[in-house]
Length: 95
Image (cartoon, rainbow, N blue to C red):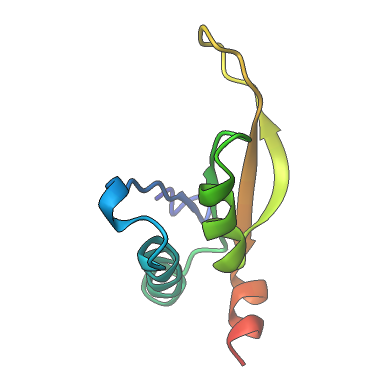
């Protein structure tokens, strides 16, 4: 977390045996709520490969929306959507 900027990045990985059970979505929601409450962040972001529809769906279910695109300078150079959720947006979704 970069408290000076008021923003943090989240990443996650879940073993295949646990896919499709809602665990990642619940974990991202809980982490997001805790981070906004305890760290007083303004926003949280994450990225996933465009081909990883399940991971993008986890973020969408947790309230994240695509805000930017990241083009890494690695061998693949595949653009990756940056998903972000803002504190006000997340909190208003809870009420």
